[in-house]
Length: 398
Image 1 (cartoon, helix red, strand yellow):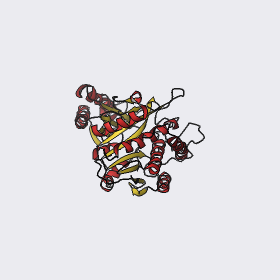
Image 2 (tube, rainbow, N blue to C red):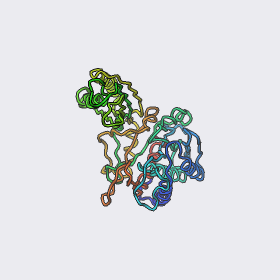
Image 3 (cartoon, one colour):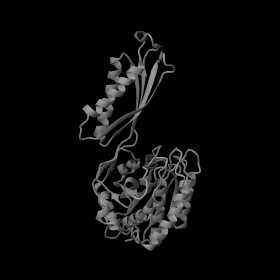
Image 4 (cartoon, one colour):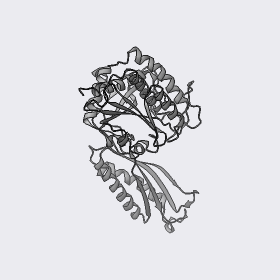
């Protein structure tokens, strides 16, 4: 199996660094990844990999068959997924390859994920040291728009059947080259709520003649936290963050209405159902106590990412082969962040892996920070991991 110090991997990683920095300089938002998709498709086709485009718009799949594809090995095909989109934010890194597009930035490492998977595709196309089929899945719109869901809804796993599917995300909390591969829920669901608090406007000096939605909104924000602190099992994880409040036009006018918006995060499907029900009831009761009406819009977003045991064990074996047990974290607290890899892992047994990127000698910035940058030093590790995983899982004896 290849290692991160293999000269072939090192040479490909040097190319991947160039690809990564080019993608970084030309960030594209959700479902607008035309240049990135073109670059990925051209690379894959140049290595003799079959490319299918137009899945979820800018998404694509590269299909590579090994030396004995269809030879009867139990795991006939696996999928490897990378995301391609950037964020709508300004970059302040000052790097030579910083974003050339105002208001857009690769601030979460998707440029690195894409380049890492491209590097593995090149290595595997050259060596073909596996049996069966690997599908390289390049997904749009992870940050906004649920590109993973769109790909699945458009028949991703019907058109490209996979026995297992895997995704990697860089980790700004652990040292470079460390793999975190945990069982069960590893990322939370992400739901959205919008609350219109409807009252009766009036003069601020005569509040008794009005129904104050500002005061009502304040009570709702405080009461909502009791759903987590007093109505959810302390051993479960749930977050209710009401993050915006808008209302009023003047300091001496009680407005007619106030709007509150926020996000709800949970790890378990049953907790998700309970929190939604209890939150709505709490908001309605709190508003009624103030003599106010409310209109609640609750929208379910990405579901939790739940790693399957079979995929976890496969990923752990490959990670240990690359970095040894000392660089493998088997148990860790789940993230309350969300990931639309969940839609893929809900369709096919899957595993979402975190690959540490922290260089202790440098200042570290987490994803979504305007000074964040993907650590190119982990590209060889990621390329070697993907390649080893394919060779490990797609063998005659697998």
